Amino acid sequence: MKVDFKKSFLKELKKLKNNSLQNAIYQSILQVESAENISQVHNLKKLNGSTFTIGFGLVNIELA
Image 1 (cartoon, one colour):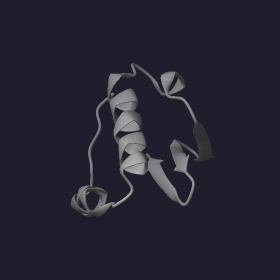
Image 2: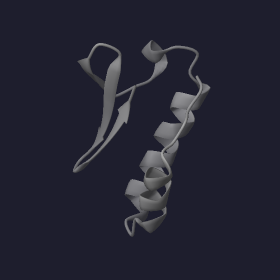
Image 3: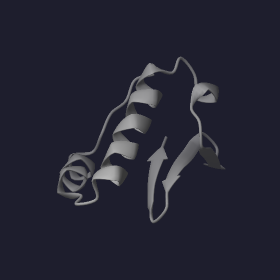
């Protein structure tokens, strides 16, 4: 799938001090990029319409 990031997201991701959280986010990004469709992405929660989120404790990533 095609993935685009807001500049603010990338900036915040680089600032993370928690390496295990940073690695989990990077792994999820790789999984989304390699998926052919949304059903191949694990740990998704549907919000509304075509918007989904992946949760990492206190951090959520929204996919639209």
